[in-house]
Image 1: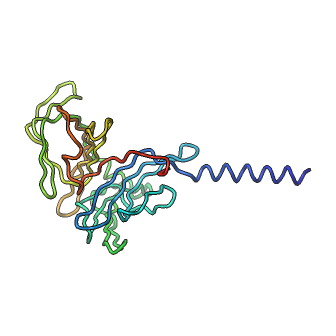
Image 2: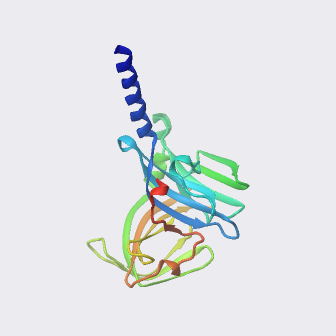
Image 3: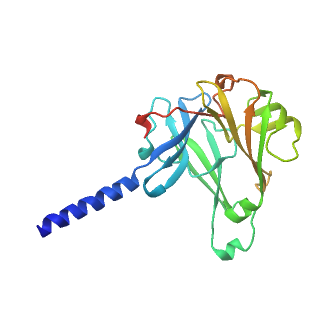
Length: 239
């Protein structure tokens, strides 16, 4: 009986640990890499005991995204539009107190490697310096937009968040960290943008989070699939 109880206890502990290791996708976005069969997924996922992870994954467009069987790219933000030859990203890391006492705004390190034949560059910044250049959060409604190869332009914007609303004729963003969400099929509900700006010498200039909503009904299909992430409606197979 003693051995049986021990077996039951070990089994329960194994199940608890296994549950903690299993993540379920809470949000999923995808964009295409131009002139390629490759796509990039951006995922957010929750696991046992409220553990959380997110990341970016390169897959072939014929592959099925599986949260518990992916290897993420080593960064948090894209610096440029991903291509079939090159992807450049940025990550910030917390370091020891001695380094943190000095605010650093240029990369501590730049790492290079290859993934599926694509050259991946990661610029690693100090978390404290990166956070210091954060310039907050803005929320607008836009009337129209247009795209170029590497940028997107929003026109006639009204501030809908601050106590002193402002009107902007134009906002321009690089096609890097742009995420489009839908609530009803094919209709844009929200566009989230992390507007990260680096100087030509790789110094952090600013990082501003924008949330944009269309004034008029806007189809998600009116945006291109390159350089812009579009949300994927989740199914049980993805979890």
